[in-house]
Image 1 (tube, rainbow, N blue to C red):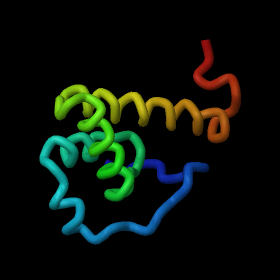
Image 2 (tube, helix red, strand yellow; image 1 turned 180 degrees about the vertical axis):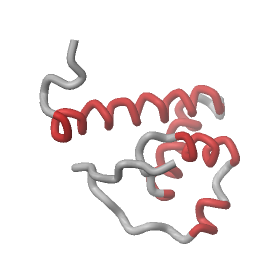
Image 3 (spheres, helix red, strand yellow; image 1 turned 180 degrees about the horizontal axis):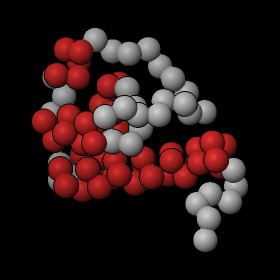
Length: 88
């Protein structure tokens, strides 16, 4: 599946694949389905904070990642498609 990588969000250098491979399986699975291209570094940081915030609850941490990604998409949508998107 190809993704549209045209975005106004900041880009970072790609991390070596072994860093991705060392992520927890739940986080790797979430990243494969993510709408945005997350860096390994930012995914690790958000994952660690979410786990700490929710006492190690993996489902809650995944939900937090969903919330963060939704907010990032909402922030980027007006710049990409205009202020009326999506329409009524």
